[in-house]
Image (cartoon, rainbow, N blue to C red):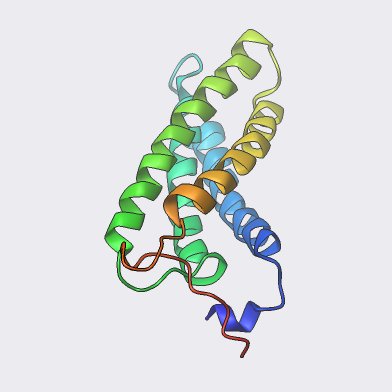
Length: 152
């Protein structure tokens, strides 16, 4: 599928994938924090909504990034998914910490705090996906390296 996007730089595809995934993430976050979790006291609803949205958007992001952005070889999908879930857990932990710092400690509005957190996690996520989840591997060391564009 990547050959349809050969002329589009990888960073632009990653940005588009992230925007789509972020839309899902924000929709879930808004619904849960503003509608579903309103009876829960304190900042717990914000963290539950953040984590649920992040996981949902993250799985969407993995699928798009695997098929279009990084397009690794077919073998090794399970290992890539495990690395992605590890990265997602790390980003969820780091994002929750940053969100707490901005919202609770700095007293920023939760939507602004989430936006700033998400921009930071976007940059961290790109680097982790590029060099950890979908990393290139030398020949003979496994089959989960990104395929080179075919020029079609």
